[in-house]
Amino acid sequence: MDVSFESYDCCKLCPRACGINRNKGLRGACGCSSALRVARSALHYWEEPPISGDAGSGAIFFSGCPLRCVYCQNHQISHEGVGVEVSVGRLARMMLELEEQGALNINLVTPLHYAPHVRAAIKEARAAGLAIPMLCNTSGYELPQIVDALADLIDIWLVDAKYASSALAHELSLARDYPHVSAEALARMLFWLREHGGRRLREDGTMLQGIVVRHLVLPGHVEDSCAVLDRVWGLCGNEVDLSVMNQYTPNERCRLAGGPLSRCLDNDDYEIVLCHADELGFEHLWWQQGGTVSESFVPAFDATGVLGPELR
Image 1 (tube, helix red, strand yellow):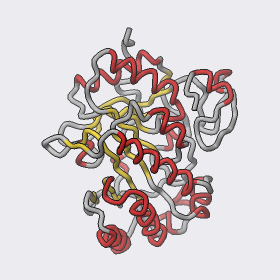
Image 2: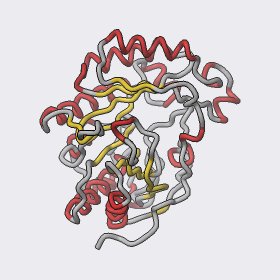
Image 3: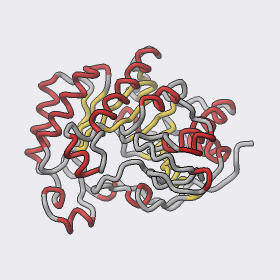
């Protein structure tokens, strides 16, 4: 699939395939034109242990998102477009700056609606000496062709598996095709992981190469969560790490709407999903202990680390 800058002319970089000419300044289904926007670039300590370790993951948060999750915690950047316009050269320089700060990896958060910029920046950073793993942190709502187009540059996929039910995916993210699309994308990630030799760790247990599949358990939807784990197990077995999260925190929209998503997750419901993961046989399983539900997991999208010199 074409991931040149001309692909923005009739954008089909995500499953929405909106066809908008983002190069003319129009905003696509992701909420963005072709102007690259970044909201934060800094060490991030709240990912899974093989991702953050003790040193931290070098997280770069991009503006925009093809999904429209009603419960999104990063709504400032995903829905409201908060961020600063930067060049490919500046994005490449950010990656090198994070490596200099001791980051274990470069963690690109929701980047693939900017796939042409991202591919160019990674290549520039690698040419300038970037040596740490490149990680793509994605909602899972990605085209298999885009996964293929970036697979030679991505070492670690940190990918959501949100829903098994098409109806629930439509209700909460306006993406009825999410279960099918995300399964196809995950299958391609696994294909490329196998091609590149499979899961690899440093001596301290932090990841050099692999896939971490994340699932956020939502209040009132335990059955769907268990069905999601069934699908991940059927696709990947123990070739991937599984992260089952309990950190759901209702945003203002969900609190006002009422219903299951207006409250936090019950511990008993979380235990049901964890037990199901254990029964399926996941060996590389990560979970969260009590007290993790907090808006403190959301960093300040204040352009930290974004402005500065370009790589030239």
